Length: 506
Image (cartoon, rainbow, N blue to C red; front, top):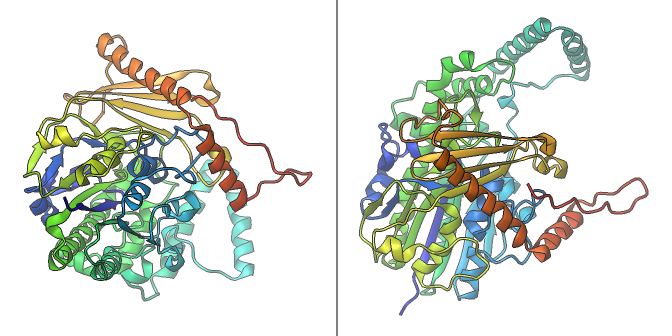
C-alpha cells in the first residue's frame, strides 16, 4: 500500500471561537469552512500547554511540556518526534516557520527535517509597538531623568506615561509607513510560496510538510488586501500602528483599553482571513501536483488569544482560560468523510500519534499520548479529560523564570479545574468552573459545591504529577541541559559552569 503524505499547518494565536466551522459569525475562514465539510472537526480540541513554548512539545513530540522539568524548553536533543518518526519511515520532510524564536533550532525543532527554514534571519524588531521613538543621546538622558523623577508618586508616574505615549504618537505620525514595513513576521503567503516551491520539486516519495503561520499574532499588521476583504479599509497602516501601540500600553486598565477592542479584533480577524486564503492556495497546489488525494491534512493552533474577556491581553501564561486553551482542529483524510466530533475534549498530546496512525506509520513507544485514529474513523471519540500545564513565566529565555510555580488545568466536557501552585509552594489555590452553565468562566463554582466532580478532577491532576515524576526521562533532560550550556554557558564567579537547576516536582 502506498504511504500517505502529511501536511500539518499550525497557526499562532488562533482561538477556536474565531473560525466559522466552530460558530464564528464573521466570515474570516471561508476556505477552512469549506474544507471542514469533508474533514473531521474536533469541537473541543485542547492544547497541552500555553503559550507556544509550552504547547509545541506536545504537538511535535507528544510529550507534556513540563515532563522533563520546569526548566526545560523545547525538544530535547535526539528526542523522538513526529518529524523524526516520519523521516525514519522514509518520508521527505520540510518545515517553513514564520519567525517564531521558540520554534528555532535553539530549542530543537529542526530535528527530523531535511529542509528547515524558520525565517528568523529576516525578522525585524517593531519599535512602534511600545511607542518608542529614536532620540539623540541628550534627549534620551533628559527623558530618563524626567521618568525617574515622575516615579516619586503614582499620579506623576501615570501623567508621565500618558504624556510620553502621546508625544511618541505625535512624532511617529509624520512617518510614511506600510503594513509590510510594520509587520514583525513574514506573512502567510511567503510561507506558502516556499512550501509550493518545495512541493513542486518532489517526485513520488511520501512527504511531511509543517507550516507555522504567525499572521494572527500581535502586533497585528495584516495585509491591506485582508482588511479590504473584511470591509475594514479605514484601518490604515498609521491607524494600525496607533492601535497596536495603544493596546500594548501597560499603564492603563481594561476599561480604557476597551474603547479600541473592536478595531484590534478586526486586525486580528484580518490576519486569520489571510491565513485562510493562503491555506486555500496550499490545498490548490497539492491538487495541482496530484498529491491531495494521498495526503492527510491537519490544521490547528498552539494556543488562542485574549481580548480583555478576563481583563487580560495577548497570551501570557498567567492563567488558563478557554480563550487560550481551546483551539480549532480539523483533520482531513481521504479515508474518512466529513464528521463533527462531540464536545468531548481532545488533547493535542494525542495529535502526533493520531497523525502517524492516520498515515500508517508506527507510533513510538515513548509518546505520552496515544492514537485515537480508530475511534475517529468510527466517529466515536471517547471521553477523556485533557490536562494543560505551564509555568507563570514572563521571560522563558531566563532559566530562573522557568522555575516559577506550575499552573495546571484539568478539563472534561462539562467542568474545568484550574490549580495554581503558589509561590514558594506555601499553598495551592484552585478555581472550579461549570463550563456548561458558565462557558465564559465568569463565576467559579463555590467551595463545597459538586464535591465529587471536584475530587475526581483533583485525582486526575495528582495522578498526572505522580506519573510525570515516575516517568521522567533523565537522559533527555541531561541532553537538553548540555545543549543549553553549549549555546549559552552560564559561569559563576570562579569561571566554572554552574550546577544544573533542580528538577522540581511541581
